[in-house]
Image 1 (tube, rainbow, N blue to C red):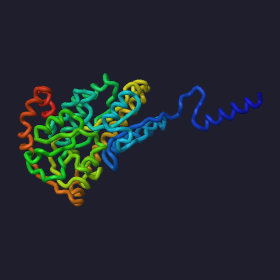
Image 2: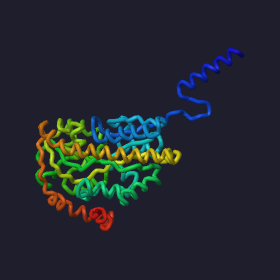
Image 3: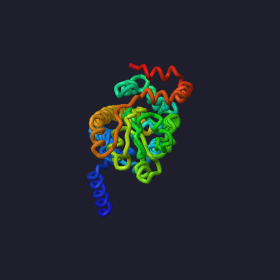
Image 4: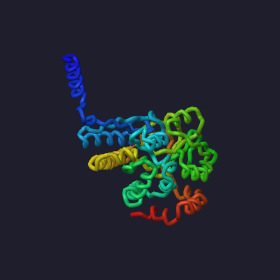
Length: 328
């Protein structure tokens, strides 16, 4: 009997040392968050800041482990995992969102946003905040809009000085129906592909080019496999912090606020890094041998997409598109 009591005491003390208290939940809840890109990037800033803020604001009750370079799957797979509850959080670009929330397609329409200030104002305002609520019925809690950035064209074949130079190029695109339709309008041969496969596909010549924000092009060293870049800025690519809805709903109200507030702080850090990269990336990529066309007549690219825009007016409603375009 003494041996039993001694064993019980040892086990009890061991539990206390490890942070377990009888009748009390574990002192720390572990969660995961992921991105598809590698390296020191604006996406890494997003999830690292989110993890730090949640841990600090909860006094260590929640710890979020960050995963990079599609180690938990590409953007679509990670979003599916969050939806199913096999992963707690993710940060994704807008690329796969229409597969989950069709209403999100509208923000990927080319040349919809004038500049970064306009895009951020729309997403942080009533239009963007209403879109966040559309995720609730899909088993996903959208915490805040982040940012991927304005996308630009790169390729290994030739300089792109006008939209007609795009014809016949085999370009990797995100798995996004709006992007694919628009790029076909340019005469591009779109090749949807998860981001984790892109560098190798460019290296092996499976595709001629790709399109991404400067932050992504630079941090993922696409200059090693792409010679030409044109600053088309053809699509603004949003980012978004996503959490499993059932998990979020179980949190006490104070803890829900911690996650929401942390996502907003992380979104600002994410955008600040995009701003920083926008100032330095072109010179950096040029110094590494890329030939870059900076002065772009975007009206020519918009004119080339006239038939596509007519269809988008039907798909989304011209009034809805104008509401975004004219937002101040």
